[in-house]
Image (cartoon, rainbow over all chains, first blue to last red):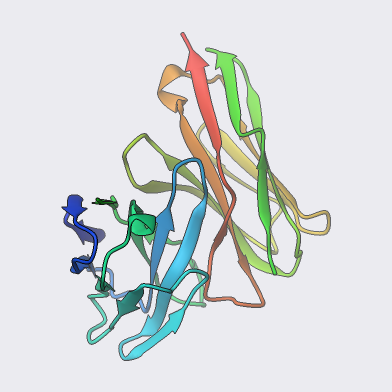
Length: 114
Length: 113
């Protein structure tokens, strides 16, 4: 029972490089989310998706892009990495609005931009 | 805009004590509230989910209460153990902006043997 899987677990990027953080869930959840967590802070929403083909911005979307071509996958793209994007990134999923709407999180990707 | 606050930011207690963690939110129009545990360098583990129509939920030594009208939730941990040491986060799903979870900053709990 894999749940929400994120890859990679760690990554160091140079300023200006780009990368894609991968997120996959095997629970057939409609809703998927990307959050970032800075030291001593709560989680801030970057982007979310309510289903395949539908994405929307959260609180802090600048510098990021997402796509949702399948129910299972929700990759987060960083273009032109900046030191301000050094953070821990969490992907989450949720079934939907009916019944139990518990959110499940991946183990995170720790990203350092130098 | 929903804002979630957790006080205190850090708490240290001796093993065996019962303790309460607090979570407050500004907009009482919510679908549910969820408590998470986060171990250092790890992801979030869901502990309890309380729907807006519920007053409390229990799981083992954990009991979470919800007072929607006053915008407050508490997480009660009975007979604390060193293994309970972690950061505890609460998150609220508001009716407005219902797709999103809004998080508090967490309470870092240390249980001393």
